Image 1: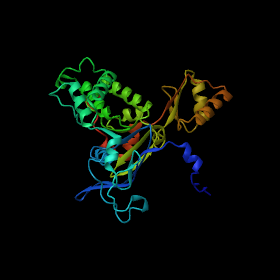
Image 2 (image 1 turned 90 degrees about the vertical axis):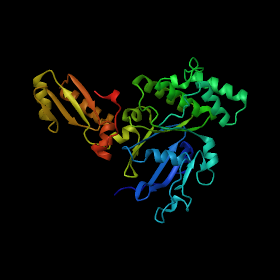
Image 3 (image 1 turned 120 degrees about the vertical axis):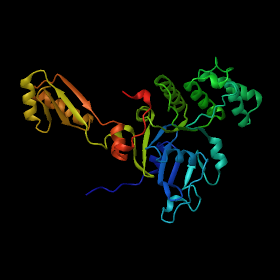
Image 4 (image 1 turned 60 degrees about the horizontal axis):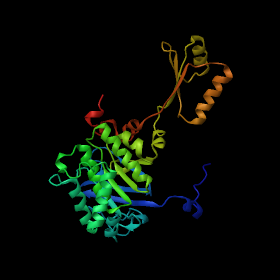
Length: 348
């Protein structure tokens, strides 16, 4: 009999990080088209949360709602007790503030870098920064200090006096993020921040994101690069047909998908035949002298297999572990036809 799930104690709660963002029953429709159909989210402070989904799945809509740019639909009568009471926000808190009751406090706590750059190409990088400082009502001296510090942090000091129209794509994206940080937000929404960047610029942006999180900033990331989510995110949610299809760490999501295996390759044909007979469940490749054995890649299973090889005296030339990647997860959860468009520079 399955044991019931026990409620979390107050002591356990005290050990968990506080939530930077929570959303219960988030809904949004445009006419008859349902974009979000009861989305629940919980993002701990000081982490990277990645939202994946096919093009048009509603990722940007989620970002716009959480950043107060658009409002969610009022929760339906059957949305559940946790979805609020007609607030239109679906029960959303960002930075500890109720989105419906205090949107101005939410705006003060967040920064947003959208899909399209907010950089004004007609003025210099420094002037873009100072403009943001004015919008945040910083004094002249505070604004200049903040601008200088961020331009240096993002390696833009040498280009600060040049028109932003002369910047490369990577430089514009760094300037865009630097402008977002002028108000020292503790929560940052990055909507596909590296789309269109070359591989070096993408890796530079990844390093910047890691530095922000190391400073305690929470990053809510949408991306079309599955390797980007795998590399950066503490937790990943896959959005499909208006709902969260699955959520967890990258490793947890990969374990949802069958296809993991251990490959044993032998140099000795006799050892290969002995192992093939003993491990009847494996898939044989007689030409390559290799066996493919189904496995979830866990330490327990690997230890069991190695112990068995040791006990029988069978020696494998090579052991490799193959686990499903996020591409496999995405295909399985959303359908292969809906894989996000991959920028040309990643094509092989």
